[in-house]
Length: 349
Image (cartoon, rainbow, N blue to C red; front, side, top):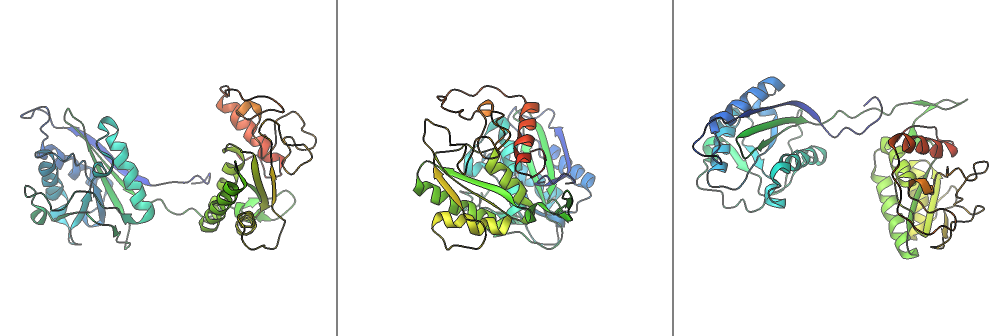
């Protein structure tokens, strides 16, 4: 957070255990799962009432799902006073990813925390008669429902291995970082969203460019102020460029207004938007609005808008070829140099 990185969530606790000997290789142990849940929530110092959603392993089997719900109910559901505990599983949407299924559940949990919405699990109605939902104080999330925003939202994620391994992760939202002030050379402290940064869009046709500009304008208008630097940085240095391009040099709000002009929106005050087609087999002219090399850096591949040949871009009058591998150190160095040319510091990507 001190570096301004986006934090998607905070892991309050995680733990794993094993079922040990069971009646069969694919038969889980509800007792082992219950012990795991009790220990991990005690470790996280999270009460059952703080839990707003639990992403279950949910394989859809006749034996596994009833045992998992029994463990969740005994460890968490029956100890709640804030109503039933919503549960669901991303496997109803994308299937079983085998060893990677836990990652899918973790990503879904992070999205639940980000959007404050529990998406529905498919094929959950009518509920299984083999699961005592009422007695366990559980409810399947079979429809979209908003999270209870009172207090700290906590989401749990279950994931079980075929051989009897059980894992659980407890997550909560990351605190919103304050915009970090930055000192401009010879000026007063400012923040990234107040500084004029280049924002680039490109496409293969003028129509596609207008659509891309509309999407970028909407993204800028809806983005939090602290994301502006990352959006501008990505648009210039992390996107492939196409023959038709447009760029603005402005702060966040002005950039959203100005780049909408490319899409045919109303004109706004500020610097005009530059747009030019570029021939497929020829690099842009050095005296156009998108020079490959800024003045004084000819041949160094330091343009803040166009990738250098070393990073997979197309060199002057050079046919397309497969990009070579670039070390991380070289990539960071080039990004710092190219973004610094426009006067925006050498902050690493």
